Amino acid sequence: MSLYNDQGVVLRAWRFGEADRIVVLLTAEHGKVRAVVKGVRKTRSKFGGRLELTSHVLVQMYEGRGDLGIVTQAETIDRFAALRTSAERFADASALLEVMDNLTLDGVPDRRRYDMLVGALRTLDEQTSALLVPAFFLKLLAHEGLAPQLDACVRCEGSGPLVALDLHQGGAVCEKCRRGKKVSSSALAVMRAVLGGALSTALAVDDVQVCAEVDALATDCVEFHLDRRLRSRRSLDADI
View 1 (cartoon, helix red, strand yellow):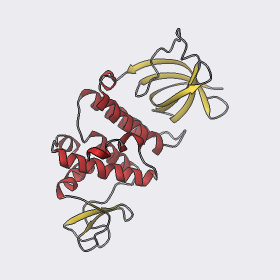
View 2: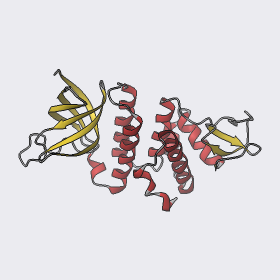
View 3: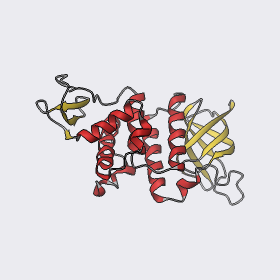
View 4: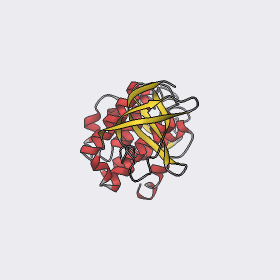
């Protein structure tokens, strides 16, 4: 078994045996990895609380002979403390982790994905924005080449006005081609800003209705491509 060091964010964790835990980490150099943390649930564990969800850590681990590595050391880079003292922020952070976990294959390195997740968690730890999570969804889809087309009708290529989002066609549609979910011009403008490089401008939007609409649309987009519902976001349905 080979030993290596890497940086990673804990995406998911569950109990294993009487005292161990399995963790899933998105790492900078090795992609998504799964590993056993031995004795972590013991009172005197050397790992303490360093491998909790959202923790950003420097880890040392053995690759292992199967699908599971073995974590031998872990040092905290950032605990993102504010995420743990706010239920709302932790729920948003959980959505980032869930999407990244489900969209990422094991053992496929992608430094851009890792940087995006760390950056989003750091921003969420420092400030709140109703659009941070949907913006992350859209930027991640863009990175995967799956972002919706929003500049012209995806069916007839007409320039507008665009009135709905057709996920099966891959983007916005005009009145003549209308099918899918209704979309307002304000929500389209925000989504275009996110995908067009004006992220800071988009995150500053505070219109509650527009934010809720963008959140719902971005969630629909990522769920469509994942072919599954996001548990971390669907609790918000009653508020949209």
